[in-house]
Image (cartoon, rainbow over the protein chains, first blue to last red):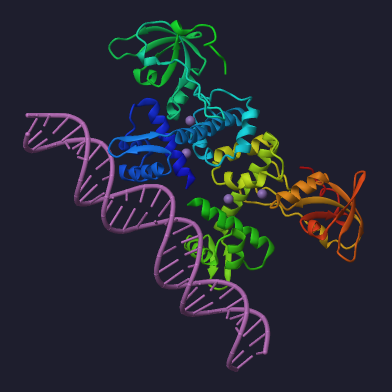
Length: 227
Length: 227
DNA sequence: ACTTATTTTTAGGGCAACCTAAAAATTAAA
DNA sequence: TTTAATTTTTAGGTTGCCCTAAAAATAAGT
Ligand SMILES: [Mn+2]
Ligand SMILES: [Mn+2]
Ligand SMILES: [Mn+2]
Ligand SMILES: [Mn+2]
């Protein structure tokens, strides 16, 4: 089915964002299938010219493959925001829904949702929404856990894959566009104490590894855009 | 996949609305598959106790099967109305979209859509939306083509399967809840001349066979409900 | 460099949902 | 009631996507 192909391409794209080379095993593990299955589909994608495949060396999206991946990602992220805005679905539940809806969205409805939302640039987790042509915004950002000294930061994006994390952050009122002040970083376990509005919280290194921020030293005007 | 099973049950339900017995060939033709394929799936549905199957004699939904069919139909009709109300999708396009979305709608989102729409009772074509328990409203109605003498009628429902028909009716401003006055019926071809607001139109027998109405003789108070 | 461990591919199947062609059952016509 | 037409089922096959187990290639350890 088309669904499988779309999911493979999307997952390859997402791995390519984090790793130089995307291996069969990485892909298989991310998708919850066996490496043997991944090899089979990769060969099919290669025959369709959607990926470049060098046996034993991994895969890479072709231009056509990247475009198709970005199309799916656009669907996914528009749907996430639409569910949140139009139906009040909490941000920890939109991802799993979008995972299914992304494959049944027609271009007509995609466009209507885009218009309804006013051509939004980011999804509820702060991830950029590619435009129709496949352009995707790249913002300078660092993982919160990689910041080494106290300073003000602005949350840009959080991982969307674990609902538990999102509920936790929601409880602390930490969302994209939230401004935080890092008060201290514990050398022992890298846990961070941050101030947010009136309250202070201590965040474990696990949590801070799932949060991307704009550090204050990069906060020139123009960077600090609203959704 | 679940999608196939859901579609089979829905189509059997729809055939049962019109025919006493649902045969393999009817089902196959409606679904655009071969009778051999239908037989295969019917046997599977029978093994799951979703249909009662007597070889060579046709199928019938069990209580469990009917409930599952109504669940899919509820999804379908809520989605149609949601697309129309929330995104302004014209009524000739909602059916095909809903055909795909009905299979990926979670119970949580179904409930949110239902709330968003105020627990609606009819879809954009006037078809009743089953409630969560599987109850579906049965209104007295007749096909417009079966009316034999001039009188006032109220449109209750129109067929949703042909976008061309829906665009045509839209052009004439004929929708569910529209009141029409039948001025005359041509004996030769059963075409009907009807008045609607300021204008009169002549509708062919083909068109009137796809429109269900409440005849004036049944228009007691309580029957003429709004959406 | 040689052995061991890991990664990746190949070989061989399974399952769901479809198909065509042939056989069997039912229904209609003579 | 026998024959012919139609409907329905069975038999056998295809495709997509997944699996396990075994073989091959690559990478790591001594
Ligand atoms: Mn997501
Ligand atoms: Mn998906
Ligand atoms: Mn419909
Ligand atoms: Mn469907």
